[in-house]
Length: 136
Image (cartoon, rainbow, N blue to C red; front, side, top):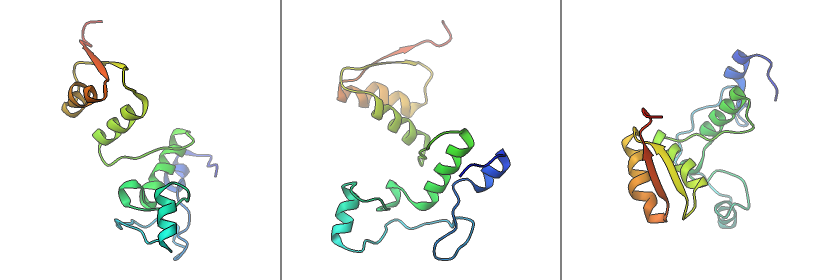
């Protein structure tokens, strides 16, 4: 759906009426797991053969509404939300690097990011160089 003004996007993008209550504002889903109609449906969802929610850490309707809202506000096609900044950094880095790659990063990093580069990624064969960003 296209919204013309930023304020309208901020309020309504990513929001669809709740199918059971017809509420215009998405309720907060605190559920950690979601029910399957059958074991086969559960297996298909875990295999990615069928869309739907499985477990909140893998996605839930509240987070999905946020992602669609951010995508609309930024003019993007889609967005992904993470529970923490470190989760977001790890997801991005792990999705683009392969064994044998070399990452160049500034030496003034958040501690968790520093550990990811210096300790964790080396176990995957990813090398790194930290550079002094104050010295171009």
